[in-house]
Image (cartoon, rainbow, N blue to C red; front, side, top):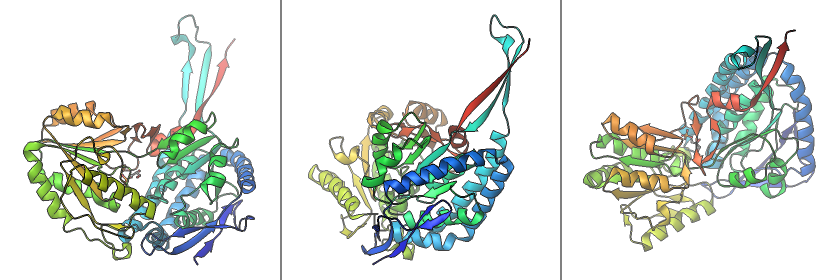
Length: 478
Ligand code: G3P
């Protein structure tokens, strides 16, 4: 009934005193694959205490030594890519090759973070007083970046390893300790990743990983007085967290409705390839997936035809066979997607493919002639279903994009760079890609959402800075 995994605290693997476990259901077989510990609030308290103690010593550990350990963890992570990828396949139905790429990308991210950290944190600032009116040159201000304390990291199911290390790496290099609460689907992959940090030899209590039910430990963790920073990626739970969290810096990435605006002078083959890649990679379960196509009427028929030809070639099936479209993460997610599809059907959208579902597996579907009264025009399916809205002017496209609650990324396809830049400036989203589908990476690029898409900016450099604060010492001369 599922292999049982322990949680990680104080440098040890432990079973919870609750005696209870949480089941991880394989999205493909819909059987329990693994079980993780249902940690108690008491266990969370102990983890927080240990993290606080460990952080003090870690902050005094030389920066180059912190970087050295991170490089070691990155190498071990890459060595373990096969077993971790296997967990990703079984827990979140990530296609086999993408699962391996996620782990390799994570190792690279940790190494890059270590390199970036020694540069950023190795520099401070010196200010002199006589630039401000009324002052003589008798005050010298030395400022540098110091850690925040204990960072709480909560990654989502779609990148349980990569979006965990994108928080762990910056936190640790900056001298913080780290408490990880992985998503239930993906928890075992995350525990295995934590094991790599354990093998690298980080001090006891510096990193811990607590698993369990959100209802038992979710709010308890995010409202815990021992937490000094929260980095969260996921859905609108983040909005609730931001309302409940104390006076601590928040970094949040909460999904999107990334628009793809297609002008009539665009390279239509490039457009079709990017719509398919952007809309259907990992079955649309990416925050940065293309989630609505806004296309000029003059080229709409051609693009829809080209996209349909590519959709017909997508391999649908189990992640073990490295299919393009694999089962979505849970049955409730599949039901939600189906609800959006049925709403669009009732309201008269054109189905470019027949709607088909078996268990959690939903065949890729392009919905043409979607109108703003349909839920799918605004809501995020997080599945392989993509709406097309035909537009008669660029302004109409920008208006739809900006009327969304979300503002993560967007993209525009045109051969006219001047128009592209003007559209990018007009789109209310954290990033706009010109002539490519939205994407978070390369991982040192800034990554941020406006409106309900998030708070703060990520990317390696921004995350390191965000997980520090400025400390000043002022030398006053007589
Ligand atoms: O869904 C999470 C978001 O960070 C997407 O990342 O690399 O697929 O663009 P990526």
